[in-house]
Length: 313
Ligand code: GRG
Ligand code: ZN
Image 1 (cartoon, rainbow, N blue to C red):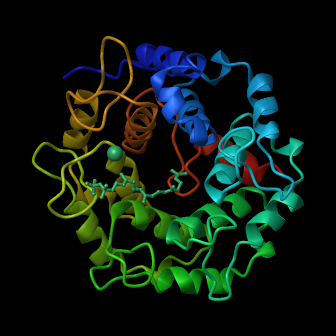
Image 2: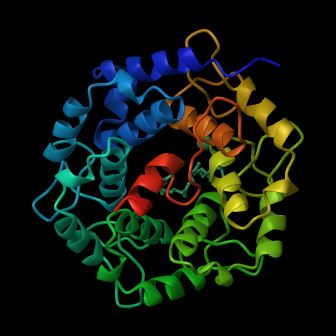
Image 3: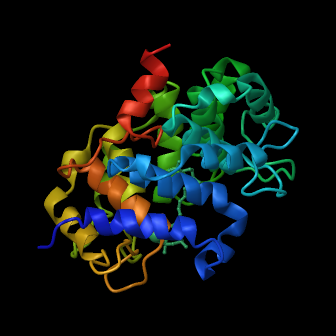
């Protein structure tokens, strides 16, 4: 079995960052902020965050902030909770949360909470348990959870729980590993994991492992490297990660590397992208692959960054 080709992945991420007019960058233009989070968190996990000029990144991030306090995916675009969390996460990576007016950002986020405790992703109003996670994770990093109604938020997430132990995007929505990460992460951050049936959910999650060792996101679906993050982080948060075969999953992820040009794809032989490179490396970090920084499964940031946020006030 091959090893993780760390230097190739660092080169790949730096090249995507520079190639701003490439096909991938054009397609991702509207969610560049999210791309920055994937790329930079990967670099940090690989121990190479200093390969980039942080001032340039921070200046660009601050140009994406809207007068409402929320952040957009790129300069001149509309703000959304997804980009607001990514912006805050990247500033946290660089230890630059102090450039923010935390109350202003927190007001934008709490303004998106609805009467039933749920969150809309932006001013257009779509509701999804994903947005509850984004709001809770972001306010937690900013030490501003008191700005929202946590009890109502938690009750809404609990109402998205299904009889199979999983969670959906809204009450009654089908269980999906991505949505489970969001709901379990939000419950973990707010100290509300008692709403989870850990054995039932652990069983559903470990059944996501298929013959090749990879994980899928729902029954009968193909395995995909991104579920190494969505499923594994959830299993860790509910203390059931020993229910899957870790060695087989490590092999599956390593098999999805482009060992020549760097980057990781969704499954072996497919084209690489920054998204799956992040999920592959983050997944290997959760699996305690040697040489990688540890990542916090709830806040999706390196553990040393999370410790700096919560224990060095
Ligand atoms: C900070 C890590 C982090 C995340 C932010 C945006 C977000 C919070 C979470 C998204 C959770 C989610 C719904 C992920 C699923 C993404 C995905 C691969 C969807 C594909 O679904 P299908 O049905 O594919 O198209 P399958 O794999 O089921 O065939
Ligand atoms: Zn995927």
